[in-house]
Length: 70
Image (cartoon, rainbow, N blue to C red; front, side, top):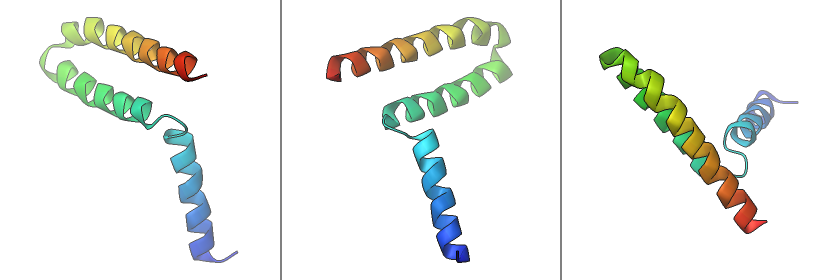
């Protein structure tokens, strides 16, 4: 296997692993990570409350989307 082929296979694996079937969830998780980092730096107590609620909402939206299209 050539180096470029190995790099291509490696990239495809990570794309499928992170993005998968729902790029919206990947973008949501990235957004939550950024929001969590900002909140933890400015208002740590707010991060403890806001982030779990945001994760639950993201999970609920993902489940709704998955069950609606199935």
